[in-house]
Amino acid sequence: WSMPLLMRELLDYYGSPTRIDTAEPAPSYRDYLAWLQRQDTDTAKRAWAQAFADVDSPTRVARGAGADGHTSATEVSAELTADRFDRLRRVVSDTAVTVNTALAAAWALNLRVLTGETDVIFGSAVSGRPPELPMVDRTLGMFLNTVPVRVHLDPTTPIRQLLTRIQDRHAHLLDHHHIGLPEIHRSIGVTELFDTAIAYQSFPLDRSTLQHLVDSAGLRVDDITGIDATPYPLSLIVAPKHDDHGDTQGLQIPLRFLDTEFDTAHARRIL
Image (cartoon, rainbow, N blue to C red; front, side, top):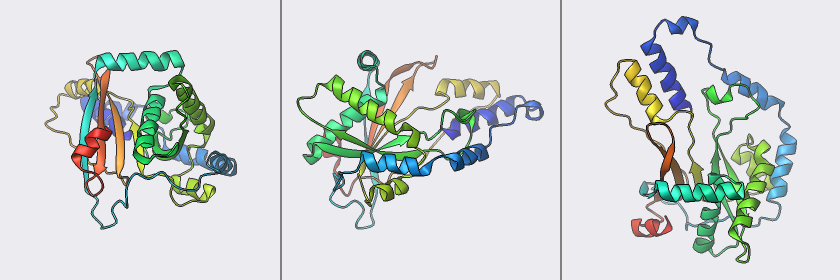
């Protein structure tokens, strides 16, 4: 989230150097730290402990990821076309849930197949930016968190009912996303809950806006590379594809996997 904000400031000032002296100061990360100190941590811990009270074992798809010290991640990718994405949006809109909720439901059903369990848990990346904090969407800093998602699966449950249930559970825990995953583990009394994770990427600036800023600054970008990593044997990332107007025109969906646990053919079947 912070990278496009930083790029925007840099390119904006590069194109108009005089604005550095007149621009409104960027929001400070200290405001978030002060907000964090005011939160009722004990209530948050109790909420997580209650939501996972009867969990007796983690949901695991791997035999022992990285046990030999080799954790090379590989990736396969698929695309949800604009037409199929529009159909998905109509379903979630009619059900009053989000695309991210549909992603969670799909991954839970996948875990049902992979593990044979009907009560599954996985990690979900959340922005960690509290909406009640002024200008938090413009603040540079580390807010990102991974929180556990628990889904009970019953073959007699209609899919729309499953979607609603997942969204309601998410909403119930939304105010407690500021608690870090190790603290959540301690609250529940476990050391591990899952070994897979999903992330629906949503950033404050799209590529076309950044390209406009680059052009306005009189610059040319030759290349951009990014390096990130995951500690999980399976990580599903969903990245919206935007047109020149910033509208979403489908999804790019990479699945990252540890090659010590899965081969490419198996990863493609999962995806």
